Image: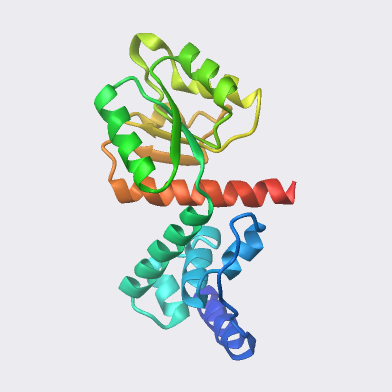
Length: 212
């Protein structure tokens, strides 16, 4: 066990011995800290260690005294609980209709509402300004319809919204220029990858807004 993992393992043991680990049902409009408290102690710890502190699943398992499979299950359950609390209005920017419909089915299956779909830059900007979505899923290559990056850049000038880029060309995003993506899913994507990324994007965007 590395020194850092060992130190967090000790912190966790102390926390377990002193915390009441109160759990229960919380309304959906609570601050992010209360959303975390609504999770079970195991799910909360697994999510924070991996998503915030950057530990691998195996290191988180050592810290928590669990197996990697148990940690993975806790992370999935935590993300599902957060998604239920953070149902949002979604704009999908995608020029390939089959992929757009696939994303729409995935998003609505998670309890979100797809308020618009756009296949071009101009259409995306217009629909974003009209609908004011709470989350954007965007491809970067819209063919003759322009650039998804340009669409997102223009939308973010009007209002703040979390964006997940879903693309087969991730290297085009990592330029050091705005908008540098915080959330990136590479095509072909797995549904569980999109699900997990949506949960993190919505939750941590709410944390950022409360801290601002």
